[in-house]
Length: 305
Ligand SMILES: [Zn+2]
Image (cartoon, rainbow, N blue to C red; front, side, top):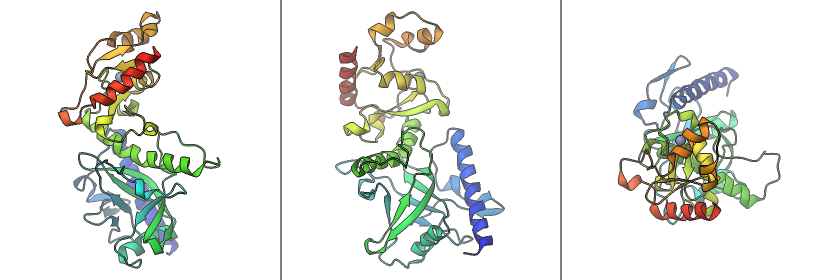
């Protein structure tokens, strides 16, 4: 790719990432075809999402700009499980069975140019969350797949050991799966709770997390019924078993903390929620927290306190 073309490709990509950053900072986590078409980026009109196939190369670019994975219901097989290799990197299937199909060539071109892409990940309930920047690291033509590296994509909700660290492969693989689940899970859970903390209804997206009821390491699925939108404070309190949630959607505060005397944060932020019902729940009953999962977690809270 000629250097001037590469600069143009990069300029459009960076403008697209800035556009996504701006919308996400305003609390938008779910994107659709309509939102991401006809954008004016770096002096050109661009669509960010493919209409039908998984690999998207706009006609005014030389390399693919995005890839897409549709939402699959988590059942016996967890979504994306089959796409993480032993090395902890993702595998993305080529289009069809010809490695030289124009879509596959476009993705190869992104690899050659070291060009970052957007990975659209299907969200439970509809739409897509955007993971970026991701890079194509290699390809395995015999298996008709590309190797995708998402280490450069910021993931504030998942702790990720330094890449210098020697990590056991199966652990790396497990972390990698959690990372890919995290963004669409967050998008679906925040949407269901109308971007508000379930406990206190606080609404600032930067200070909200999608909390798991049953943890990822305990086999918890990345589905809305295993999630709660919680503010940073209530998420930490929930994880440290200072705050519990009953299967009837009521808040309990650990006895010791309930007796403590401190400033207004403890009183208004924690103690006053004791025995109150959750302030925010999904409107659709089918999206409300699974009572069995809540019960298991509540039992652990009681055993701790
Ligand atoms: Zn809260």
